Structures are given as structure tokens and as C-alpha cells.
Image 1 (tube, helix red, strand yellow):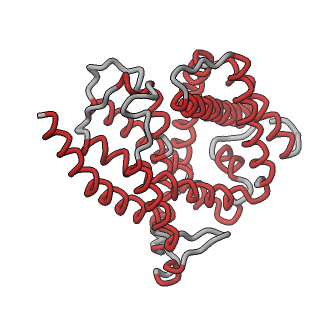
Image 2 (spheres, rainbow, N blue to C red; image 1 turned 180 degrees about the vertical axis):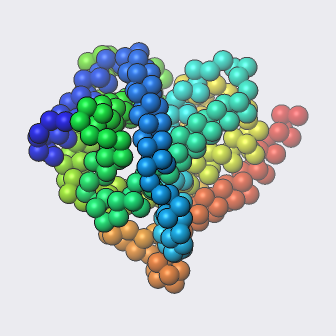
Length: 333
């Protein structure tokens, strides 16, 4: 919309994120509501244009299939869902105690799955139609589905506004994660507005530096970064899910979550040990541009590390934690 260099655009984007994040929770929610309405309208318009002005049937005639590409797509989709874990943990704590866990699970699951998959379908169709021209012109290709002139400017605005909103939420969520870690180390923690601003600026500065370094190879850098995060997120997710549904049976001591001297304030040696094992056991199956495990070639270049990182820690934690919980239940009985 404005003629600036990529680096200048990144810096302007970062400044907008920092500005909104510093104002805090209520401003982020207000901006989020506006972005949601704009995003839904823009998506509906683009998807309608895509389906009515192009022969989508030709795309389905392309039946080339490769396990490596398929599992990469599944991995990126899975990482998208797992990345919502911190948001769910943050927002679910504010729900009334009588809120149904099933309703919470269904609302989060359907919202993230349907929203993400619908957007990914639009992106896949747009990339397939654009062919080789898609790389390096991703946003322009998506906007080009709509129109030109004023309509294109409005579509650009909705995309930018949506990106700023979700990035602001990410920055604020990162600050909340830092606050949670610090509160776990101290019995009582009060973070001032000035300290919050400092944390936010440091987080945004680090993200901006990464964006500037990877701006000329964004898609590859983004893909490998997501897969890199998946290596560490997957075992954590597996342990948490097994602990919640099969070990503690959906029962947690909520007040103890903020008590460093409580049951959750101590080091969980079993959980940490299984997590480390879960990360390490994935390494032979990881395939990135800076490291490729020995099993990748044996599997035809397919990266299945996240599958290993989901199954092994989950089964291991259940096998080791279940007997100890049964013993505790007997003692209490």
C-alpha cells in the first residue's frame, strides 16, 4: 500500500505491534474484534472469487502424490494446532469452574481446525493456480484473487490489520509466559507497567531481528522454524494431554498453580525426564536444512519426528506415572 523497502516494512510492522501490546489486554481484544470482522468479510469475498472465477476442477486432476510432501503438510498443520496450546492455557484459566471441559475442547478444537484449514485450503488453491509465480509474491497473489484498485487496497488493509492483531497477541502471550515462569520461581510477583513494556520491547526486538535476517528466504525459514518448534512442542503436548486425561482424570488443584510451595511449584522430575527423552528420540528422524537425522534417508526423505515425539513420550509418561498415582490414591484411601 505504501512504497517502502522490505526492511522498512518490517520495522514499521514491529513498531505497530509494540505500540498496541503496551496498552495491554483490553486494547488487544478490541483490535481483535475489529480484525475478526474484517478478516471474515475479506476471506468470504476472496474464497467466493476463487471458486467462481477459476476452474478448480483442473487442480483436482493433478494427482501427483509424495509421502514427503504429504507428511510435511500434515506436520505444518499439526504444529499450527499445537501452537495454540499457550493461548488455551492462558484463556481457560479465566473460565468459570463449572464450564464443561468438553465444550471448551470442542470450541477450541473446532475453531482452530476449521479456521486454519479453511485458510490453508484458500492458500493451496491460490498457490496451485499461480504456479511458479507464487513464490516471493504470496500476498500479492492472494489479493490478486479479489480485484485491483480500491478493492485490492482494502484487502491489503485487512491482511495487514489481521497480521498486526495476531502478532500483538503473540507478543502479549509471550510476556504472559515470561510472567508465569517468574511467578513460579517466586511466591508473589507483581509486574509494573514499566516492566511489562520492557519485556514486550525485548520480545518484539528479538522477533524483528529474526524477521530481518530471514526476509529473503521467508518460506523456507518459516517452514524449518515451525518444524523446529514442533520438535520441542510435541513431547510437551503429549505429556500434558496424558497427564490431564489419563493420570489426573481432568482434576487439577487450581489454587496450587500460583503457589511455588504447592504441588505444582516443585520440579516434576518424571515429567521433565520424559520430555527430554521425547526431544532426543526425535533427532534421528528430524530433517531440516541445518541437520538431518540418520533415519531420514532410510525413510525416503520423510520427516516423521513429530509422530515419534507424540507417541513415545505419551506412552512412556503414562506407563511411569500411572503406578505412582495409583499408589497415592491407595494411601489417601
